[in-house]
Every structure is written in C-alpha cells, then in structure tokens.
Image (cartoon, rainbow, N blue to C red; front, side, top):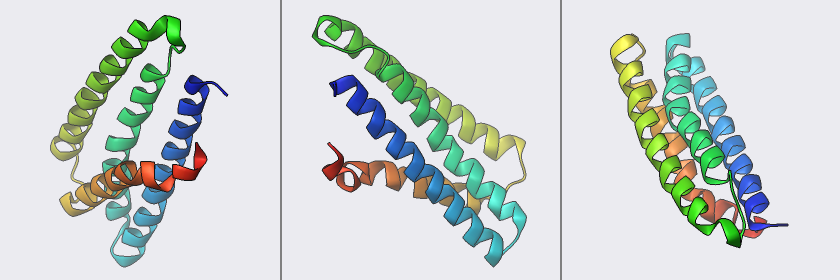
Length: 126
C-alpha cells in the first residue's frame, strides 16, 4: 500500500467517524430538545466535515517521491481551502439561519475533537 492510498484510507475513516459523531449527537439533541437542534448539530458538524473532505481530496491528489513539490503545494492549498470553507460555512450558518447557536457550536466542537483525536483513534490502522 502506497503512502498516498494509506492517507486516503485514513481520511475515509476520519470522515466516517465524523459522520457518526454528527449523527449520534444530533439524535441526542433532537430527543432532548427539538428538531431544530438536530439540524443545528448537523450544520455545525458539516462545517468541519466538508472542509476536511476537501482538504483530503486536495492533499492526496498526488503522491510519490517524484511529485514531492506537488504534494507539498497540494497540502498547503488543501489547508487554505479548509480554512476558507470552514469560515464561510460557519458564517453562513450563524448569519443566514435561525439554528440554535448552542447546537451549531456543539456539533462543530464535537466533530473537531474527533478530528484532533483521529491520530490516537486510528494509531493501529497504519
């Protein structure tokens, strides 16, 4: 397995873990309060998950030692895309919708924590 395909596999595992986190937390909020909180958690979680998917797609577009310069530039371009999309999605959620702020922030933080813990959670995967 090449480094590039291993990276793609880890990115897929991370996105699945993030989707599961969104679903579980959204169901919990929905049962505890209302469906608006469900959508708030989904929106906040997607504000992390979509940029993460864009980053992975961009960062792992090229691979191999011969493409080292392209890999580095793709990594930085992916990170820039991730930051820009995160800001745009969060601003859109908070300004253009009436979703509860607590739910949006809870979804965002929960999925972000999964992303931070991914290296520990998937340590045995590599």
